[in-house]
Image 1 (cartoon, one colour):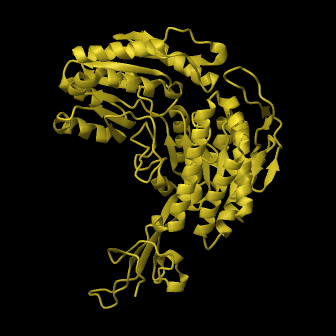
Image 2 (cartoon, one colour; image 1 turned 45 degrees about the horizontal axis):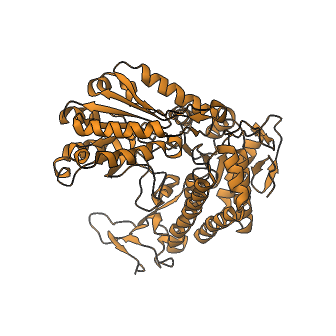
Image 3 (cartoon, helix red, strand yellow; image 1 turned 30 degrees about the horizontal axis):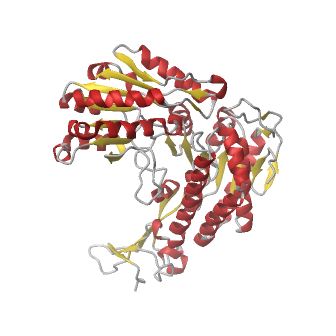
Length: 531
């Protein structure tokens, strides 16, 4: 499928903007072929006008068509074959195996959402029948369900160029909810975005979706992105990226005459708490697991464990020695962008200058900056230093972690209380230790969206029970997840119908349960018809 470098506006292509950009291979510095046109204000408005028209005119909704669309997108992505893998690898420096795995995850979650939509119970239908004879006043017939919120803008991530990108989790969950989607393509991955965007556009045409159900625009976040967020047609925003980027979009959306939700996932230091019994049993084994998690993908995961907390003793010393040896032997790796590498190097330099922090280990081989390479690093500080310096709780995005040596269990709990909101928190405990950790678990439950026991947080399973979210600044809405089937709820809103005749109601709320979904009828879950 040839790259065209144009903006996708519904069923058409457009290239009105004079400013163009090229992708750069971070591993070689090579400027890649094909110029991509930034969207103009007129193109932004046209894409949103089409999305609004498509959304308003698509009544009644057709859940089976939504499910077919999601499955068709997965088919079209797979049909791109090696072309997609090769171009994405050239734009990111990521290896073929990682990208094939990510494509598989992307297609799996598209098909998973298709199953959720086809089954239909996610709409949370609730029916309370009228009781005319109720005293002192009659009870009306009241029925409620979730409906799509409207046109959604999606800002993809740098570190998952497929799974959190044009057809990634935010797009999949918004389409599953029945919302049109406008993607603001990542400037660093325009070719990969172009290929997947064409696949989504083709799937929309083949499944008969209205013109404008999907668009994709190139441009900068400051111009194209802000124009999208501020546009009155947009009803919600999905974002994965930095704290500064997510907060900028959140503030812009809140400042609108009609504020809209921004579901921003913005990163985390994902603390790991090592209890004394676990370290005594398996210090070296935990060190190996931590090293793999910290350096996986050159540390470019939002669940990268950037903080380790433990009570200082001989077992912790063993753990530090083993982790340090592994860090020293780690080869430098190519990061996704020069900007991400620059941020990582600044973060490492900042940590090394904080009073009370020392560099415990660094990889022995020098990083090649011409190849956008980063070197892994291990830092150590005492508990007092962490409690006195709030910046030690800030994320350094890349292959580095900071170990906090606490005086005792009470200081470990104090460190936990001083953490900001996190995507994850992890505990390593011996079999007989966990029962006494109620206070620590309660603190971490209040700080993180996912608590991991005797594992590591990298690797976010796509399944109905997954929660990938957390208190601010991990996300802008602690009640939501960006991974798993519950992500669909971000792009839906409740609608209540009182006193409607049965044939005037949405299909899911009518007396006859033609879709066979679970419904709460007079307070009881049922798949039966309403008699």
